[in-house]
Amino acid sequence: MAEPKVCVSLEAITVEEMIDEATRANIAGADYVEIRFDRLYLNKPEPITMVNNDGEEYTKMPPVEEWGVKDFSEIDVQQAISTLKESIPVPVVFTVRAVREGGFFAGNEEQRLDILEQAINSRVSFVDLELSIEDKPRNKLMQLAKDSDCKVIASIHETKSTPKAEDIIAMIEENSSQGDIVKFCSTVSNHHDALQIFEASNSLVGKESKHSLMGLGNGGDWVRLHAPVLEQEIVYATMMNNFRLSDKGLINVRDLRDAWALMEY
Image (cartoon, rainbow, N blue to C red; front, side):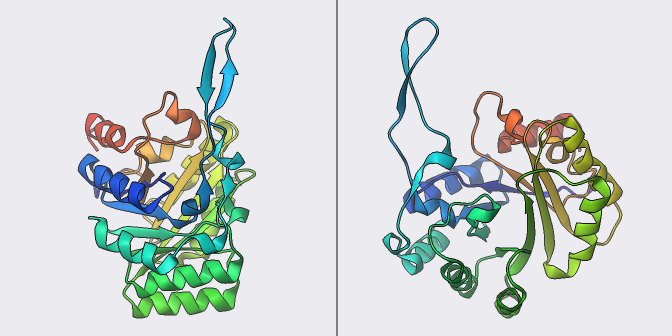
């Protein structure tokens, strides 16, 4: 049984913090790290003061979806890519997630595609190209990636709901030529949704496509936990270690490795 590669998606919002988090992820057992370049455009707000039922004050950070974003011109893209690539000790999955797919990029689509092109030219190991990108610019980036020996992750994000298992399977199989790996991620509202992803993953066992399936929400971590027997190519994990992290469908990289060892995968 081949063990999937583990990719830690970085939560940091500055270049320096990303380098530090990537170094810690490497020590914790990550094979790859995902640079979410769009997160560099986030402005971290001040904590909000709250009062609990006992009248005691405490502070809480607003949800990241409510954070402000920097202007596109505030980030030196070329310098940031160069520094990250030179300083991170493991292969990188380079991502600039659009707002329409749950990301935080502050610029327009042309600017986003230009950043992806610069990353490919820097010869990162992987680049994440959403299937929602228009055909002409996406094909251009695909060819550029091929010429630069950069593997393509063709990503699909269903941010509102989870399709039926048969629809997920069709998405993977129909788009297997659109990248070296097809990634599917959806919002999980209940265990029925989580089972759709698990059922699709199980049905894809033994097929030729290389894929990575997951959910965000309670039960979204089921496929991650059983990824070795479900023949997932990459499993995305996190360095976060929050209480009830599994409610978000996420799993800490050390906990993931420990779970695989306990289940003798």
